[in-house]
Length: 251
Image (tube, rainbow, N blue to C red; front, side, top):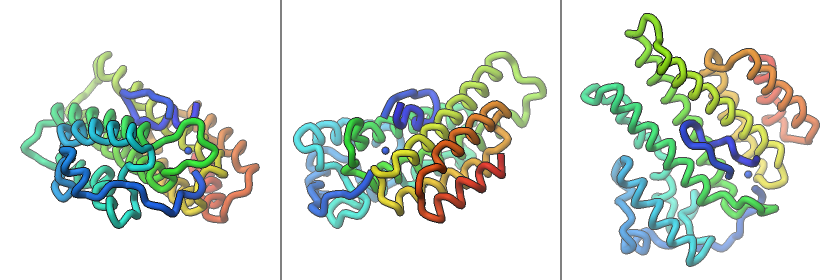
């Protein structure tokens, strides 16, 4: 199911890269702004992401290679805003109650999934947006980490979780399982990615699992080990192999 899998929670979608064209066909920042793009130099909230998604969807219809790119001199500042950890700083705002933070995080998670769909080429043998897809996946790990931290805070004052809470926690854990398995599936498609992207993904996956290990049930740990044993038959760089081996040991 490809990145199925990579949209962290509450949003299940199917959405994976080798060399990118040397020609930068993204628009300039001024061109994006003329179309109504929010200011990338300011922190974005849900409304900015909503506007951005509409504009980028239209831009892609005109030219599929015109989306903002990570290393573009023309559009890097915009892409970096899409994945900026600053957009998640509201989680540390004591003036916002935990319930509102949870809702806002859900919306950002959903928008992250839509962004990944925009950049991901489902049937391509080589992804044009290799770097960008990898960075979006890594941003998804950041969302996952913040979601678990927020869940911990929500549970601090709960003696016995009610059925609704239990269902929410299980939904969260199921989403995290899909995120991990989906990332491993993408690592298996190593011919679609730059080596450095594979390395970044494996490092981010290792770090995220280590941080959130307590949320992974025993049966899921076994599933992850089996998936890793399957894909380690491929030839990866030493960094990727090292991180995958460390994940197995951790589980």
